[in-house]
Image (spheres, rainbow, N blue to C red):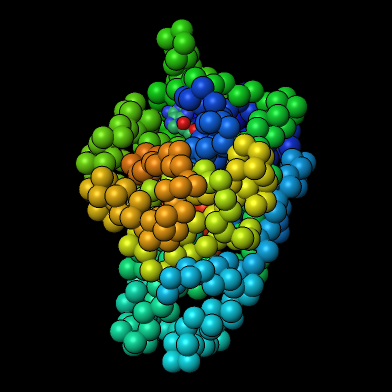
Amino acid sequence: TDAVVIGAGLGGLLSAANLLQRGKRVIVLERLPHAGGRFTAKYFQGVQVSTGAVHMVPFGSSGALAQMLERLNVPQQLFDADVFGSFHVHGKQYRAPGLLSILRFLGPEQSWWFFRLGYLMFFSKLPDEELDMPFARWLERRINVRRTPQLVAFFERISRFALSLELWQVSTREVIHTTRNMFRFGAPAIVEGGCGAVARKLEERILEQGGEIVLSCEVMQIVREEGRVTGVRVRHKGSGDEELIEASLVVSDIGPRATDGLLHSRKVKQADVLKRKISDGAESVSDTNGLDLHEAVGLKIHILSEISLIPHRGIMYCLDTKRIAGIVQPTNSDPNLAPEGKHLLITHQVIQSNNVEEERALALADLHMLFGDTFDTHCRVLTMGTYRGEWPVNRMTQGEDLTPTTSVEGLYLVGDAVKPSGYLMVEGVAQSVNHFLDLLDS
Ligand code: FAD
């Protein structure tokens, strides 16, 4: 074997397919009984219920992920959003075919501030001091936030839905880079067959190219000699057998914290991460020793509805809610994601406190506020789950990401802790793989 990939999440699968295309012999090791990580889905009551993603690809059919899938000969139909989105505000849903449609609910004064911000963000040269500021602080400096509640909510809800972050958790620089890329690449898309279809097709492609994917196989240790990686020690979950797999290239898709753990033969437990116990290891693969790694956390609800509640393929941002930032109805793009005639809706929000019960109750209250009695009579909550610790929305918050290189030669990181600036979610995962491949070539 030339290369071992730890983790069959999207980052691991994309890395493996790219390495195989370059003629390497590759083995992917996954501790779960299925591949795809947080970008796949399982059938539950006839619905494609995802393990993470809301079936969306942020930059749609021309983004980094779509380009990579094309290069890998993995055909994938992506349904780009047909509108910028819609906005639920003042008790009704405003359809926004383009960005400027938001002026309809902003009114004259807030619209003026909207243009002013647009000019500052995209046509002026902001000093580094302002670019480094949390976006919330920058807004406070540049506009009168008390007089612009819907404008602030507009930024806040997009950040919560797309980045799973509050505006004080993301820098002005990152907001500008990400927004620029949204304009450059275009609208988000829903994947035909849902995110599970991407994972399945990548698996098939890897096997076709002669790669191997071993499921229910947990990597227990990353082995190295004299600062160079030499392989991994694994445990097969069914038989309990342990094995050493030698390779001079190891690609880790499990994030920096768990990768650090494996270098010290230590398993990172979910409970430890939630308690925010920081690694006391003497060294760290990514120079993050002693630093807390900040993941983005969220709560997602799958809802099955008898009637359509969102009349387009984009995101409905909810500006008057306490928690829910946005909702998509992916069955508008691919009706097969739910039983015939039914509609799947997925909500997303940031978890704002450790009181998960309260977060869930506030989400349900939001749904009643948004849809009234319709929600009780026509909708059913299928799942409501939190995503944090070692199964977060993002392993590193947008803009705080690491680089793929580590302090161990031949060991690289990919995935959602390695997203380059401006590339969010799975676009960042795809770009992390591009970055890793560039480093391999150089
Ligand atoms: P993962 O998917 O976590 O893959 C890592 C894999 O490694 C896992 O399969 C894990 O089981 C395995 N593993 C861990 N430890 C070991 C070990 N020791 N040995 C072997 N295997 C191991 N992104 C979007 O673009 N669009 C969206 O709509 C979207 N919505 C989201 C909504 C939610 C609620 C969440 C949680 C995430 C969402 N994301 C979305 C983010 C997206 O899901 C992630 O960016 C992406 O799936 C991360 O992929 P990854 O390969 O980096 O990591």
